[in-house]
Amino acid sequence: MRFKIACMEAKIVAKNGEDLAERYFIGKNYLILKRNFRCRFGEIDIIAVDRRIHAQELVFVEVKTRISTCFGEPKESITKVKIRKIIKTALYFLNLATRLNIKNWRIDFLGIKLNKSGKPIEIIHIKNITND
Image (cartoon, rainbow, N blue to C red; front, side, top):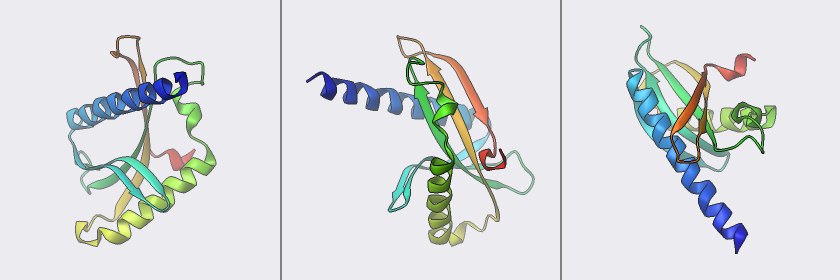
């Protein structure tokens, strides 16, 4: 029973984090195209267009939300395997979305730490995580 409750709590934390991430990017003048895009290769939490750049850029965002660090810092969840899955999923999306006509794209990471009441205490945005 405790496992089931923990899974439900994790889903609530993840959804809360994705909602916060969406508001964060909208506030930075990004256009949100899709949330939770899924295909056989994996899932991308947010797909957006960075409109601040002269030549608009498509941004695939991995969002990781934590309410404690017992499982590590949010950015520690980004492994080479995870990045490869995101790249495959992004390429699949680009193949489907040819009408977007956006040539530049990148993969960003947004790490969110919440306090016990669900309020953000830290938001870390790392652009272009494939360059690390």
